Length: 474
Image (tube, rainbow, N blue to C red):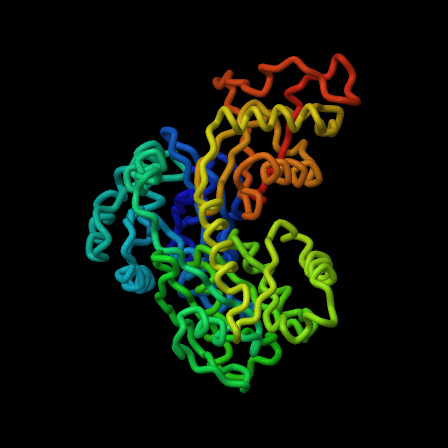
């Protein structure tokens, strides 16, 4: 399982951003009395009682944004709710229940994950009586907290952890039933996605037409290959934003993006006879933002096989999508089925990579070797240090590095470590989420310092435990 998402929602000005900063003990989200300050999702990795989870702050529900970004804010809220494992529904104990609180409650009734109702700004017992009216929202018993008076922080964290899904160790991942792999087929219009689906299931399951935009919704198609079940998600072709002239175009794009988010593997299709477009690059960026394993699929290859070598297309794709150079590239002909089975088999390999787990010992030995080969440079006359690392999630593989100071680390060295993870671990062709956390003063664990070897080009006085990674997930 991936790192659980704990999403904070509520109407404007109930203290959602203050709650995130209070729980994280770090000032991350901007706090202001003016409604609408938070627009995008703000995320922070938390650990309580040895359970990792991501806190996600969202914009206020029901706000009319002054910069006409209401639709964008609502999209971000919907994305957060869709990915939530636990929802923190925040209300304002001082102001009492408002009509917008009831609107938020109605919106959350269709959600199947646990909801914790939080009566914020309950600074003392005077406000406890009026908190009772929030029972009417139907979201359970309100938990009284105060970010200003530090009231019930430990109670809230314990409640959150109790509502999280079972930890990875509790899952029957080894030897259990393998889940159906969901494969999203995405790309711009008329690149052969529906033809590929029909060939895959050996039936005219999807409407195939030379008219661009025939598929207007995402469609799930179940099929079996070598006795194993799969779900193929055919998606609408994506158009450039300025070319989206109707509501159908707008919602088709959003459904395609939602299909990417719920897929295990994404097949990004290109037409071998056409150049890579801005839409292709936007799709690739979106897939990377969602940390989805991806295969770059060059379709209709039979039309160019005699005139262009595959190596030229490989270089073209790698130059165009530099941030996804780890993604494998496949050349197929969807209409005839050439290389289609091999593509699905390779997708299975990526699925297994994304669900792989490595031991803490193996991970730290790899990091020790990485530092020997190439230690990180000092920053601001200080040496960055890595003490130990652990994998805390799968799909995507999520690794937390405990360091002395996250701000000392360069992005270049972060990329170096990610490449070493792919070279030396089981994640060679999938995205990896990398977090950096400052080691707690009471934590004396230092697995990387167990070796006294000095890497090439380093002075004898230079410590081996000079390891670093970027502060943001990579």
